[in-house]
Length: 392
Image (cartoon, rainbow, N blue to C red; front, side, top):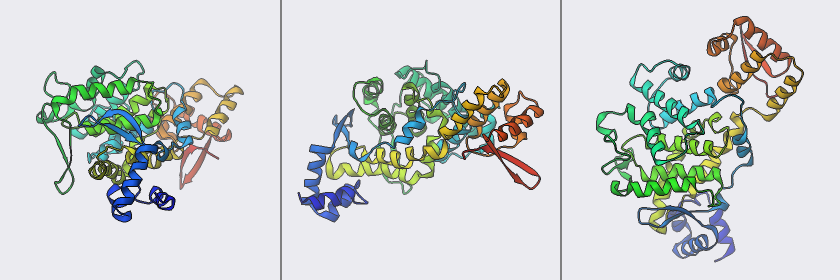
């Protein structure tokens, strides 16, 4: 194959759309291009399609952003997840499924209020799911996956789409349709689900496949959605399962970064990547996960550094701690600010209300002292003052 044409195809803006490449460069060039992908670029994934053939991906096209990995390894002491991040996670994972909820309701549910509406219940379910997966003792097994689904999704579904009592998976066919009513995907034959789901769990718990673990989390996400084992809630469960896997692999900050926020901000591309994989099967007769993996590396992982607190802030805080000028309560307040507000603004009233077990005078002393330490900075809005983490 002409090297110039190969380079053009590998860098084409439609490089992941096989039908467009075939149309633009001709069948002969496409066939040679696909042959090269198969011989030199593709790597098999130990997961099989509905016909029993392996999924593949192209590692060269989905390099992980190094800063993203760095952020995933960062930990915040004494917290199982960042409340502010998981507020964004819950609001966004529901929004992806067109389930409306208010940020205020989610915030109150995260701080202990009982749900008061149907959509509140769905938010509460995701909160229970996050509590479950944040516990490293809850290993990923068939039984625990069923428990996760029950407490986070199934308990809040209408009777006609709930799992039958005692069932692990749906007991009938399911079809995914687009806005025009066209079927874009059919879930796996329900009679085959137990075997395929066993294979997925084995893949999750197999550390010998030499696949990058962050990429593997995305493969798990996609494949779960591909099988579509439930009547409803497959997308929400797929996103929880991805986070769960990362927690199990000790990526300690996975629950301090709202993956679904970045997915929701790029929702059209998210669904397009699913569609592209299905469409590519027709000309290639192979299931290539690369478009979905590429979406995550470009539109999700690349955003982490814009959300998480910079390492310099944490280093400055450690330096201040060594001076002995920070009380234990002030230390708790700073970690609370990191977890609950991230890089967002807050007022002293917000902090007093959200932290709860603290006097206003303590909060006031805390923000003034930490502004002197240059760990917080203030912004005046008329008579009001708001604070935020100082990244400078």
